[in-house]
Amino acid sequence: MINELTGITYVNGEFVEAKEAKISAYDRGFIFGDGVYEVVPFLNAKLVDNDDFWQRFQSSLAKVEIKCPFSRDEFESIAYKLIEKNGIKSGGLYIEITRGAAPRDFHFITGLTPTVVAFVYEKNILENPKATTGLEVITFEDIRWKRRDIKSVSLLGQCIAKEAVHKAGVDECIMYENGFVTEASSSSVFIIKDKVLITKPLSNEILPGIRRKNILKFAHEAGLKTEERNFTLDELFNADEVFISAATLMLLPVVKVDQKLISGGKVGEFAPKLRELYAKKIKKEAGLI
Image 1 (cartoon, rainbow, N blue to C red):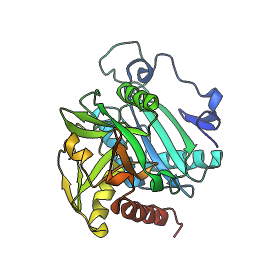
Image 2: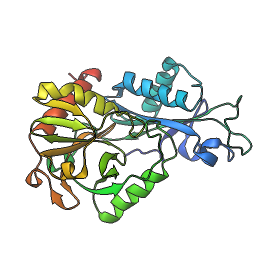
Image 3: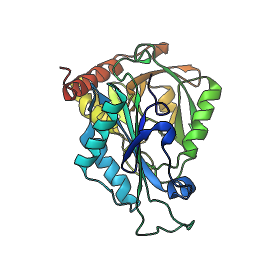
């Protein structure tokens, strides 16, 4: 399986072998975490949900006052060349833009040339065994910064959370703040109770998930009402169903939280329906149906 360490990488206008991919030691992304990134899924070698991902990428860049150094057409050209050069049909495109290299100073230094790095990795988006068996997760206090709506490359809080997941031998962690669920360490969180789909409303406390946005649109077709509101850990533990969503995971059900069974430890009724609706959408975009 091709991953980012074995394939072709894009660095500042050039396509190079991964081992030759280099940036300045003085890059502000390396020194300060001063940059943003995006992950765009692709299927059948075609980007899917790309309108939404592009808009979110531009929003993150604008919020930290980094000017995007290329147009959308240029971005797509880079993306498709990477996909072709690496020979991958299904997976994720990672792209990162930092403010650039400069003497170490905290304020936003103007006139810099942004650093751009992009790579692709292989991932079977449509077929995931966890879609039928479900995930086991833990809860973890949300220790991240207060602008989670920005897809920042500064991810130490998420790394700490993922290490807790690794040590617990589970699949993911659902984070909470002051007793209320925020999101998972790298995904959005939903619960279902009495045929109502519930997820936290958009704010600076969570990332505006692209999968989240579309799942809310599919809810009515699946037979669900929706509520965007804060919900507690108790509501999480007592939900009829729990699931997470992310770019290359699409939607995966949760069957156990902190060793407590959800839906009797079995995948519920609605998560598979929503996943099927989402799969149909991206298959159409990818020209598979």
